[in-house]
Image (cartoon, rainbow over all chains, first blue to last red; front, side, top):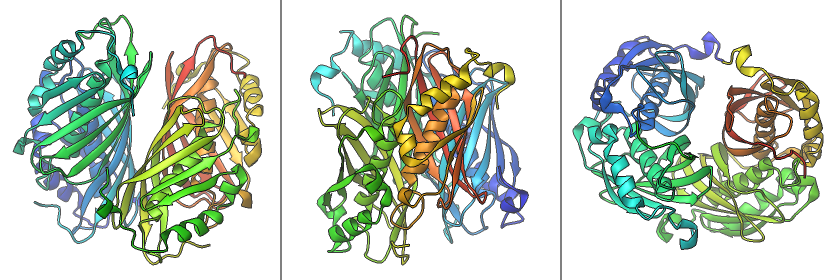
Length: 149
Length: 149
Length: 149
Length: 149
């Protein structure tokens, strides 16, 4: 969907910058998520199975599915941004396609990079290949505002 | 948006049924969320502040905001359902309006109840009154399928 | 949802500016839509019944329902903007709640005004009071870019 | 995204059924849209440039973009359905990525077919290859209810 040229990262240290930002996300630590892949405009987040993440029927909570897709979309966009900016989630929409059983992976890619707004998409799959969810997300870059508290 | 007649619960024990279901959600326990109000077609979920729930800049993670809004929408719909059914989230869309600081509350109400599909909406506010997020969600009733593992 | 103070229009001539912009929308003329109400942060668009607007079963086409809700959200946001800017739709999500029969009205209001992004919501009703659709939309202001071709 | 097996149409006459249904959509005739491709789980709708379809700045109206994406998603789902059913749009979300100039094409495919709910996605492109919009849509099958007025 993107040509390589569209996804040239503005910051050569994009991967370490994404990883350092992800490491500051206490919510990702809480649920045990791991930033598995960081390419320009493409990110994978893995979520090993944990009973603590389930809803009332024993599947992974839909909100947890949304969390990893949301975060994967965010870092796919962040990977293309300049070093001195931060990013906020404007909105996202997620369709839950199948119950989430077992470990999950969220694979996100930038659909349209932009100076102000970026649109990204994520697919969430279970370990057994089931397509669990699909997300479409809008993000806004805050130029010159650091990605730290 | 709903007349009282639209929101007559099919199950007089709706509140205890919702509370029992919520109590089975290990993910809600993990993040410390509490089912504060259960009325017919209306639910509030409270989320006290916890540093473990934050993202890289110290705000409550947008995915956590989505989780409580998602769950509040779900139980607002579930409160109107017959006793022997369960409910799945079809999809939701959330706009993050302001950073989430401090404790949060998600207030959800049914927009349109239905035999198969229900549409619900949630607003998330911070303790200081800031409007943090707004969600629109679609849910599907599974008739005769119990809400247990 | 908004206090009056939040919705003070930046341009006292907001109503005539909105009406002039709407009059340039040939697509609104094509479907016969009319800008009925323009208040600060609130807009109503009326769509009289026309057989030309229907889908295969004789109801108003869901995309037409989306068009008037989209446009109503846009002008609710535009009403609060400075005179020298234009506005683009970033995204919208619409739930079709009931088939659209007869004339329709889309009632939109700003949920959160902003310097760059504004979030608005619309409800579409049929002449007989049926709730036909609900929309949540994100818009972006383009400062200093005129709202003309 | 779909394996061929997932997209086996239930009705061998799916293409003529889709074309007959599309031909009943007066709203598609009004805007000059054409059902260009009907494959199992995949549909293309073409929209030649018409000044009557524009908004205030001379681009194709975002609601018109939504209309053709909405309709393309619908028929991508309808192509996989049994002969004696009809389909309603539950909801859709569309991101407008670039202004729509010139003729447009909406390319839709089923993401997840289902007995009750189907999820589809559409991309809208301009004649010059610009990516104009991306849509994610949920549809519901009405078994045994004919697709006629």
